Length: 298
Image 1 (tube, rainbow, N blue to C red):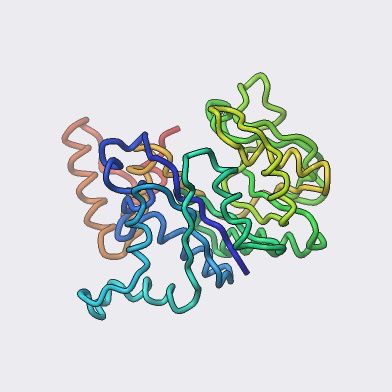
Image 2: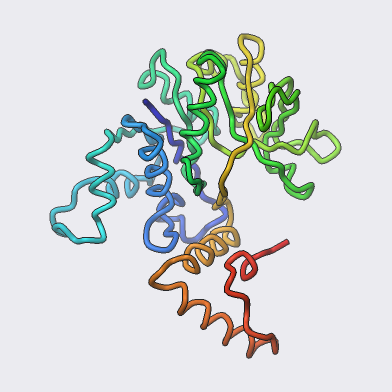
């Protein structure tokens, strides 16, 4: 199975850090974001991974390369395992022309088969990997219709997402009738936002070729999915698990805290530190040991 991971964005929200380092290489606890994404792809059964990079993204390629100077350091064990379980390829998006254009860069590599798409700046933590959930639903629906992952987003975040609307045909599965890319709250047809994980038929490539630049002058994948509706059915699926969007500095910090709190090596020490520091700063009682209560922002 093949998966495409667009990782060519400029990372402007993380400047100046991303002036010389790809956003996808920012660490979450002990490894870069892109490694979590590749791990999900491999754990979902994908053995052919294409990462779409861009200018100044060479560090992403180097990360998955063999480094003899580090020998067999135990911390690299998971990384070595990935290279043994899947072939990892790279292609460059020559200009930053949007997510849709980045996916189109994979057309020759993917060919005429259905494939997965995972964003290079989103971590999904699920008992059954999210991409595997999408693939299994794709097969269950007959293997001829694309499936996208969605989640209910708060009103304040609607304008950050592609929003879908349609009819629920089974629990958690929606036959999509319309999509809008980053609408205003008044324009949104629902609160179901596309989370950045897809299982797509190869028909999407022809739709992308016919999709003109849209919002911000970029080729939007959501706009191509609207064209796809003219050729085949499209389904949206809610999922079991948690999605970590690393889209800005606060979300990146929040994700690091959550992952560290759950880490067996650092969790207890971090809880003690937070309880002491926050208690002294605000006169608060010691914080709960439940990670979600420590980092909840809503």
